[in-house]
Length: 251
Length: 92
Image (tube, rainbow over all chains, first blue to last red; front, side, top):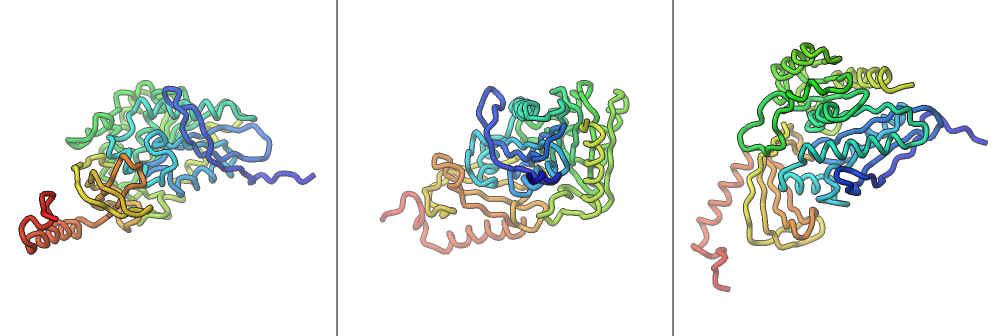
């Protein structure tokens, strides 16, 4: 009998139960080798449930985690191209916070039911997903959270933004798990000042957190398909993500 | 930044998307991350028909300079044609 290699994974689109009992699409990747495994919910960025996001999910599975990304635009645009789905949801006012939390909760519950699940769940997101990772970690009982340059956690959104984008710093006392924050010094949203304010508030509250801000990097420095990609920041950021999840989700 | 700030108008005409021509009913204009253009932010213009689904969309991602040049070109083209030639009240 051929033994399954440690890096063998299965990756596919599935249906899970999200907020309000809705059936939503999700992309999951799981290791094939048996073992005790933590789970990670990936919150996609505003441009949607795209190919590069799915590559992140597979990367986490190769690293040994059961990983899943709910399609936050599944209701409005089932089966659509990610960019068309994102445009549709934008025109409709975006994803409201309560629905996001419900979808992440559904994804976490799905992970908890997989064979070998060790009961530990992390959440990670980039861009709008960074804010939403913090939101989820303040709304659900989780074991690790990673906020990659999420804006509008601290700062007021510009006038005219939907109410769904209100600051959520006030939720910080409810942060349920350690938080890793990865930011670009040259980013304007979130600005270094906003990052410093979040850092200070979490310190004041005694919340476990670890922030790193990279010189020469702005928003989206993890995005390999965009000119904002910064190889040094992304490589160091991935190293820190790997270490952080290993510390809090393995076992 | 993910702005979510979107200008939305009703439109009357047609657009050609990935699945061919469709009757357009709405257009949105917003400044945000592009999907394809090699910039961090662009002026994004979508011509849509939500009733036909998300793929009924013509999408543009332009720098602000070229988006403004496009707007001015639209004004010039209309001004150079006989008044009302392309109006919804035109005689056909």
